[in-house]
Image (cartoon, rainbow, N blue to C red):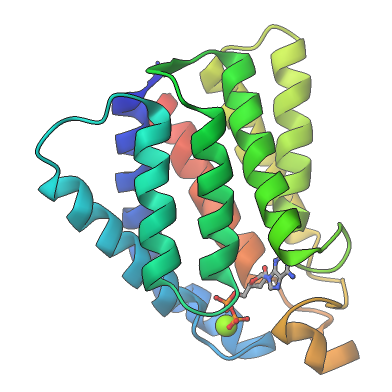
Length: 209
Ligand code: ADP
Ligand code: MG
């Protein structure tokens, strides 16, 4: 069930997986950026979990949970990823202003997240950013929902597509963000934001499974 408890579980699993992959994300960002991605995201999600733990009343909607993530990431994660993920979760929270999401609701939430990232960062596919993981994820989610998939199946399809999309950033040359400063030397590396997107979407699918 993709309800409030799922949303809370998704956030906790995201924090867990980001903590487990902190070093890897740092190393990926060290190769084509400044090496802060893993540290920033880990700090942000730890702060989110602390806020969840301190809540006195249970959130009423999925959107309430996602809004807490948005505001916390915006204030604790620096660099490009803070505002990008912050805007993603903020837009997603508005699309998820209900106690439970059906498959169409899951799709609308993921679409809103991607729209937020694009609105903020102005990247399109093929520029070696998290957009290259989010875009196929949303496309796969739409297709699975149209085929009658359950919310869990929709999220699983999105997560698998994000993995493919992240892997597909390796041969790309970055034309947005810090990695673009490297020009052709950005080729041959996995984009850290696409990798963290993949991890976060797998956390969503696992929470729903
Ligand atoms: P910074 O580059 O400021 O150090 P992070 O290291 O936290 O920020 O995040 C880097 C990631 O942000 C990149 O791997 C990429 O996926 C993503 N990114 C950077 N610029 C953009 C953009 N304009 N649009 C979408 N994603 C972007
Ligand atoms: Mg960085």
